[in-house]
Amino acid sequence: MPKRKNIADGVENIIISLYAKGMSVSDIEQQVRDIYDFDISTSAISRITERVTQDAILWQNRPLESVYCVVWMDGIVFKVRENSRVIDKTLYIAIGLRTDGKKEVLGIWLGKNESASFWMSVLTDLKARGVQDILITATDNLKGFTEAICNVFPESTKQICIVHQIRNACRFVVWKDRKAFTADMKDIYTAPNRQAALAALEQLEIKWGHKYGYAIKSWRSNWEELTAFLDFPMEIRKIIYTTNIIENLNGKIRKYTKNKLSFPTDEAVMKSVFLAVLEATKKWTMPIRDWGMILNQFLIMFENRLKL
Image (cartoon, rainbow, N blue to C red; front, side, top):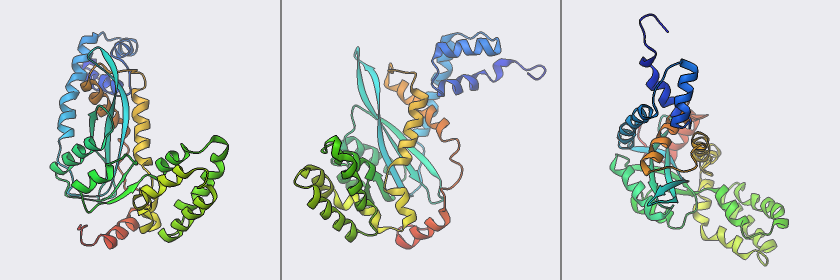
């Protein structure tokens, strides 16, 4: 330590950083004692981490950009104590791709379960915070999600995650046929255009329809939203046909919160995930790869809606 400096000067930042990485209050107390030979009570640690709550509220209600090129949305389930019971609650996350090519977590919202009605409230919140237009949304195939987006951002192109669809279709296929069925499905989402994709779907139905009709139906039921990415150049297709970007973030959030088997309150979930998001997105400082080319493609395809 520099002369005339007290270790307590930086202990709050250390505590918050350790808490963000998933350590419990008692573990932090032990860590600070072992490494810094500095005693601090668990109640004092709790008070320090509680100050994060106000930061989380300000962050959650901050103004947003007026236009986002892409917004990915997904949910992650946590166990939370409520009325002496531990129940599952879904934390909703939205990531936006700004016009400068950088990703930004737009917000986190906690609900009892993943539903289209709750997503409607999420989209409404985004609009209230300044979002006027979303060029493309990338989501899972939750029933009613497309309608919710249409009601709030009617001009958005809606893309349902292909990876979610593959998993969904495979639910109807017995294990011994899954490898062959999945290989045949690949002809659909690797097709050069919608016409070729439809031809591949028809071939899939000819081969497998008699055996796995519901798997085929799952494609046809959401065909427009599943193949929306085929209307775009290859560079844009790569970033919108799945929700991998947000699932990667979910994985990091899980990593930072894995030590907490359940949370005592909704506020504890929000606080922990907020800190995990800050940690996980520290390296989001550069535009996505080939952004100059992708931006030009967006400007051409959305010339009436995208102004720089």
